[in-house]
Length: 470
Image (tube, rainbow, N blue to C red; front, side, top):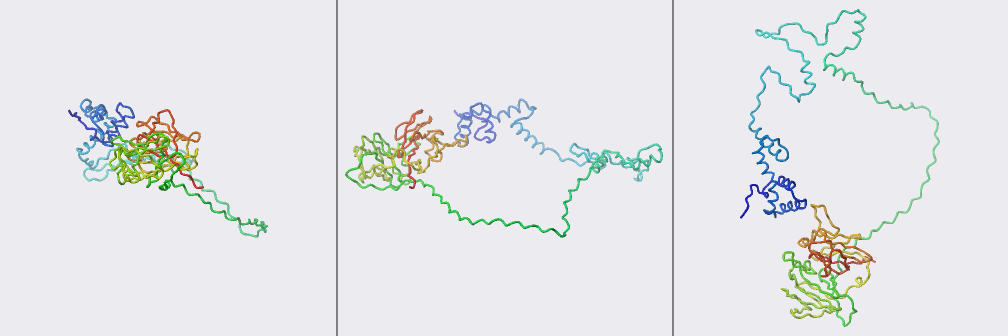
């Protein structure tokens, strides 16, 4: 049975809904989850139940019924005050002009000078009712006061002294007029009159420096552009030295180092069905979509590699021959493996893979998007997914990997460089971490080298190195 909500949170004003979320008695992490649910329109009734306890709209109605005269404060109070103010402005009649003959009332916003001028203004003489002419009467000047008779000497002395203003307005004007004028700027010293001057001894000219040769232009080496070397099909031969083997994608040059003892599942990532192969060919298969989710497997045992089809729709082809389900042939150097329309060459590993720690530019290759990500020059590299809401961004950010980013945690794994080796450590991710199909457990570190694939919940990164010039 559907629940009845007086106010639906999804239809609420975003500003009021955000205030309800902030005042809810839940953890900060749950508040962020609820805000994102409303932003992506994935909120449910269970989300509404958490906010209905402190619904501001319901509290406003209860407050209007129980305490109508309560002082208005907060967001609800301001909203209610604004509504009452708008209603009062619409119903208030226009103010009438004051009648003639009545002086306007002095309000608190009138200036001090205007009030003093009104107080010191001389009163108008009374007028006759019959004729309207002013009635003569005794008037006293505000500045004149009755004084006693004094000797002429004193009168002359008093008349010579400055007269003290009688009113407050006059005193203010007197103080302004009595302020000293700002001092004039000091005059600059005048130049002496021209006249005969003593000859001045000429100073010797400074020695001229010999022109230096121009410095040669500095040439900056171009930045190393990350890409795989072109994939070439090796020539078949009767004998090849033992060592690691790999598959090379014909179009992208993507190199896949095969384990000498172990199994790799080749296919295509599908986050909806939770099918996550060890090696993802989404980028190589982006145009034709001919690779199945679980297409084929390669099993290494004592230096021998067997190819097995896993019931794919378009089949697995070896040297232009479709591979039956029950057959598991052994691969030879120079063989061509085709998964759908993606062509791979079986070859021996390059020499750079056999060095202890080859010098060059190390990078991650995303098998989902075909993006190259150079490794920063740090001893510890954090791999994960950025979260702008938390202001968090790892060293290797996989948030732009589309559907593959949904299986990556914010702090998924850590790549550590120690004693000439790269080590991978899982940081408690939700969908786990693997290297060539082998799980990496929390608290342990597993080595990884060029050509191997780091599996992050299904998002696959190939670690590789490209030798620099020289």
